[in-house]
Length: 522
Figure 1 (cartoon, helix red, strand yellow):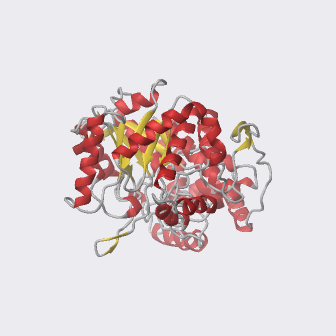
Figure 2: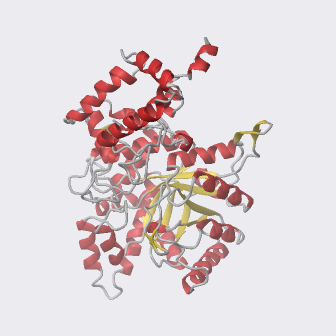
Figure 3: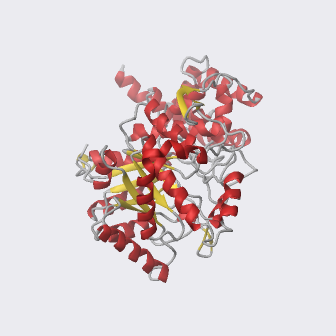
């Protein structure tokens, strides 16, 4: 791998440095007053030299805003490190790759790989969501670029000059249910295996959850990968929106909202209390072992960021005394580790997950079908493969394709991608039943098990898949395979033919070779 020339990443790795990044949010338009204030804040931070990076959000809330990539290139010229939020929601894989080349040329050295919020209102209506890659696949793309991407060209394999990105990813520990939280940690492991070089948490206010994310990194064997905690300066207005579920993945409990309501009665409208809360979070995260913090907040000024740093440093030596104030579990919230009664945080002992839930009768049928037909040891695997060879390219292929599609529409809402992921997600289709098409685990936007896009209407498919698999003690299989993005050259073709003839991602993973290749191999 090429050497990563990121001063921010170096600061995160330096055990004598507590790395601080400050989140700036671009608005819509190019030269509105808000954009001028944005640039003025960035210039002030660059002159002061007290923070290690600015982070730039990418169309937050799915709304159009000034390009995070263009702004990052502009801000880099100020001499300050920039972490660009690089999301999958609006861009195809080719566009993501192209933008990364542009960022490399502009010396933007840090990208935070994110799924992104579902598309919201824009010009003449709602935008088309893209999600051609997911966050784990995006981390993998950046990792390959850092190694020197190889691809087939006119003269054989071509290797590109390596890039120099520090690539980060996000984990959301603030989930209420076992299935929801385990999905987050399974996906975190996939991001780390794909090459994530630092991790940032989602925002929340439960110290035990922050500690849980830190412990999970160690338990997964990635204790050397730095982790930065999210410190969001929470106003009552922002809390009201988050509490209503209007900001995906952000959790504000009734207890916290009640505190903010009481604090808002003060002459300063609660500003002093929320600044102090942010400083206390800075302090306890530094104390528990985090490598840095990611500071954000609506309308936050640079001098207020410095105030949080100064106050946080002063409070850090006594960080354990601050923990009771951040004992704010979600109602009936689930934790991965046993509680430590002495500290109020966690022990290193995972909780008992042995209880097995019921599973739908339909899933039992899918398991039987899979074992009989699609498992290479199944009694019908050989006949199906021979039949597929006979049908492929014949006049019967179109009819076979249509019959397969009709059957899978009725049972799985099939979108006819031709590169099927049903076996990867307990026979739930991530392309049709997940609005973001996530093939490697849940996005961070679910709440109490409900889908971000259809709250209180549809369960997140990974919550459902976890429950299905846990009945058989197989829930950890969701962490195993790094599923590639769909190969769109297979779209509207038979996924059964593609599987039995060695063309789709599952066949390649299992070593099922195309017939002609099989003959040559023998």
